[in-house]
Amino acid sequence: MNQIYKQATMPSATLARYLSKGRYQYDEDGELEKRCSRCKEFLPADSEFFGAQKSNPDGLRGHCKYCDSERKRLAAEGQKQLLNGNQLGQLPIIKQIPIFSKGEHHAR
Image (cartoon, rainbow, N blue to C red; front, top):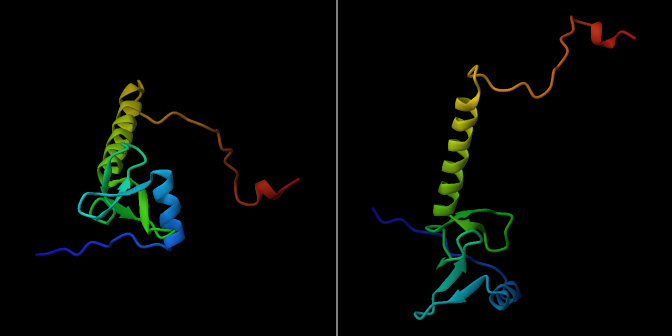
């Protein structure tokens, strides 16, 4: 099954600004490439390599999919270490929340 990937699209003035700042470049075949904000590699500027983000002018995330998966993996490992490092195997209590009976918290 052939997948169709969304190409980066943006106004020409925005593209010119991104090209001048080094966020984008054209490869030897004339294809537009985007620089990942994390690994700094230039990859094709499409949804195969970058996730979608509607709020960005080009419609793509700033970091590549590989870096995003690595970030998520490391975050999950950090959570496992936090749980394994606790002697009781419970999450630490960050803030004590008082427990009130119904209507008690409104009393003055």
